[in-house]
Amino acid sequence: MDWIPFASAARRRYEESYGELDERALVRKGNAAYAAALGLLMAHDGGAADWFRMAAETWRESWQGGESWGRPIGAVKAALLAGDDARVEELARWSLELGTATASSPIGRYAGALALLALDRDVEARHVAESLRDRDDFPRDVADALAYLSAHDVVGYVEAVESVVASFETRTEFLEDAPVADTALVLDALAKRRGFTESLPASPVLP
Image (cartoon, rainbow, N blue to C red; front, side, top):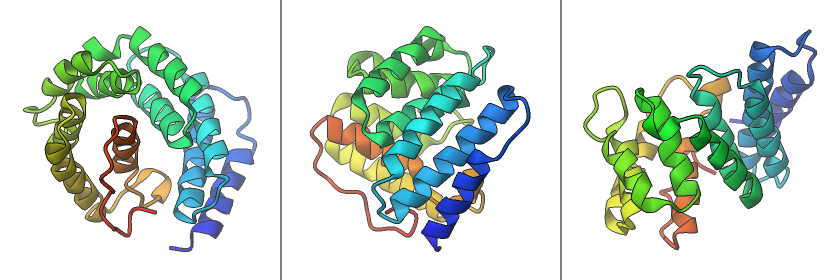
């Protein structure tokens, strides 16, 4: 994958006029900004953080209520990957105010678990993560990684996150066609915030 042209194309999509910036247009712009950030990250370009911030802001702006849980998930993930602690805290609190931690859908609770972990509220995060572990409609390895992070179980976490990376290696569909294991990168960012020193495995879907 030639990541610099990929990132350039994503930036152009972000900058295109989508007419009136309604909810859908903002989501598309957020997706393009995130793709640009992933491309720059994979190319080891220091400009990735700025594009992750733009993705977070645009997805936050696109929120119109309801249960569009992908947007708070994306916003918190993008802020974590940007390394912007102030925005991580702000967006995580916003996510929880939407009721993610007690949502009926697993995707909503995933958003809640990420937010709680981002705020170092690990006891609460563990309860939410545990509620995801035996569901058929949510990836078990992601739920395991969240639970192990909240329990500070390094051995369990490493096994779970390696499974997450392996699952991305066999995928054929990615957001904005960016073959990047962004979920593993986010889990790694949360692990580093807890003092875990273990590195992610070498993989074509990781920088």
